[in-house]
Image (cartoon, rainbow, N blue to C red; front, side, top):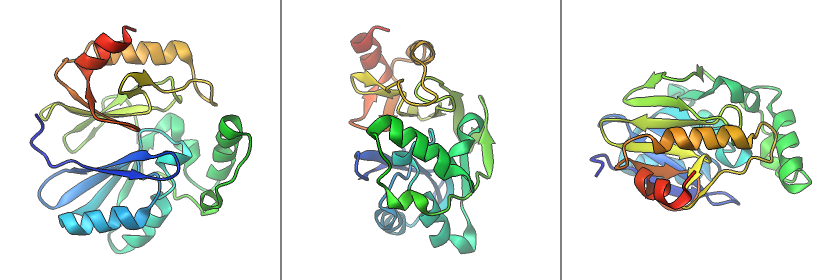
Length: 217
C-alpha cells in the first residue's frame, strides 16, 4: 500500500481524474489538471502543499484545461509544466490548433471556449526514463504519441493517464492514436510488478495484476 496521501479530484465534463501527489512534506505535483482549477487550488491549500510541478500524461483537452489558470494563480512561484516531447503541440501559442483537431475527431465540433485561453509552453519536455522527484517517466505511445505514465517505484504507484483504466484501455482512433502501439505499451505495463497500484486518467484505482488478468493483452 502506498504511504503517501494521494488526493483524487474528479474534474471536467468527462470526469477526469486529477491527482495531487506529494513530493515531500511541503511540495506536490498535480497530475492532469483537466478543469475546475478552483477545486484544485482549494485542495492544495487545504493540504498545505505548494504546487511545484504540473505533470501531464498526455495533451488531450480533458487533462489540460486548467493548466493556464493554475499557472496564473501561482504566478509568484510558478509551477513547472512537464509533458512528453511528442505531445508538446498541445501547449504553447499554437496549442488551440492541436486541440481543435482532436476535438473535431472525437466529437465532431469544438465547443469548449476555455480552450481559447492561451496555453503556456512546457518547461520540461519529457523523455523515457526522466525523473521528477521520485517519479520516473515511462513513454507509452498508443492513445497519443506522447502518452506517458509517472511511476514511483518506491511507493509502488503508477499514474497511467488514458493508457490503462480499470477493465479498459485508451481509445486509439484520435489523432496520434495507434492500436498496435497501445497494445505494446500495455504489454510493457503488464510485465511490471503485479502489486503496483494504478491511478488512471478516468475511473477507479486498480492494479497491474488485476488488469493483466482482466485484459489479457
